[in-house]
Length: 422
Figure 1 (cartoon, rainbow, N blue to C red):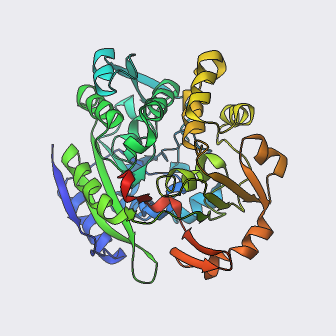
Figure 2: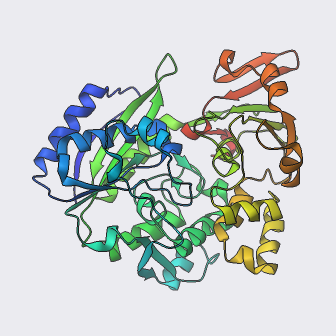
């Protein structure tokens, strides 16, 4: 196993021209390929630059790229406008839609003994390694998984083999992976490259994927002095070392540690990217380790229209709501429908403040009654946007008539935490 390219530091900037040269050189050195499958993320990871890299791969391989499958996981399929924006000039007939409920195969099981050992006894069942049947069809001579390494509530640091086993995974693998990390404790996982679930996924890759021609293209994204997103690191390889190098840089670039805990945090959700609380609760996951007790998180969520990205999960969020971990665990014990959808249960835990602070959603496309029914507070978007004019706020500390507050412009890009939580 090999790392073919590795470059990055907190001050590195890889511009588009250099990115194109790197992609062209690395994939030329790999030799000719006749049937390539690309696995980029979906539009919820637009800042990853994975769309640009996918376009470069299409330019390089041309007709040898036979399939492009966005790693949707449980998310909605990408509509045409998202495909056009993220993958300009790539023919739409190349895109395949991942169906996590119906379109997967189980390629092996990680033993119950290994899972129990890795999770400190929290989960004692074997874990099914599942992926989309297209990956397992053995018709491709290269499978390129593309994405950003960034703090993540389920896997600690997003991407690498998560893009395979979750992004193109099935019901059992996704449900149990999410629940394992939620039960283990989000604060024990978030921003950490090594954690129980990563150990399980690494083991599954080692045991079951030796015959898959996998190659990973991993970015680390930061902000320059003007606030623009830039590539701080690029790592290309088929080995664990490639991921851990990217994760090490992402910890330096994307984990923000503070000595003061704000009573008020405000997060803005770009309406193009965030249409559900399933995605929008990155504002909760990524700031929960910063907000002071009895504080408040206000989420400016103009584009949010629903709770789940999947109709069944949406129904379950509406039924059970974002409650404390003990409450959700009790729901799981006593309700078969939630036991059968453990990713939903995990999401309810991740989206909770554990009654430590208030969460207020500012919306215009989902009603006050709906928001309050799941355990959040509500304010009209227009009212909140007038109080917190995101266009004129700076990332980090701001001040208004009520005192200091902390603003996060894009919660998908990092982790904000108090020093005591890291």
